[in-house]
Amino acid sequence: MELYVAYYAPDQPDVKLVRQKSLMAHKEDEVSVTVEGRQFQVHETFIRSPLHSLVVWNWYWVDGKYTGIEWLAKMVFVNARLLRDRRGPANFAIATPDQPDFPRWKY
Image (tube, rainbow, N blue to C red; front, side, top):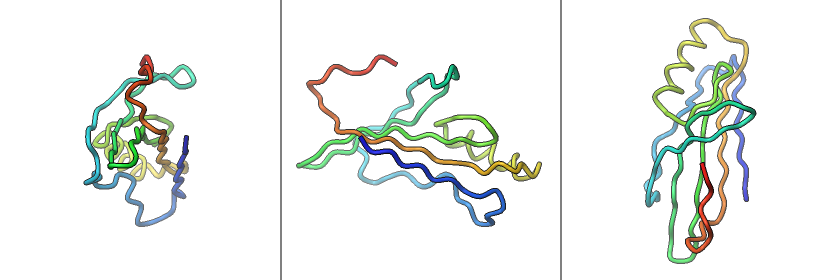
């Protein structure tokens, strides 16, 4: 399992929190998860090649809120900037090998 966290300082001028979609994605979906008692959506992407298959969950933390919904992350980010929120946003991603014969997690 791999974990990626990108934190952006609140005064960083050219932050692009939400990036364009991957051209390598085989399937994309939104799934509901609960972390620290908070339920939110994460973006689930399956990336496949002839040699490897990964499942990636990514989500955002903006203005104290978690979301995997890109348009919502952008909206909350713009609002936080306008209100001069001193907390910077973060982008999280977890990748793990996708094993089709392995029982799927319960969401």
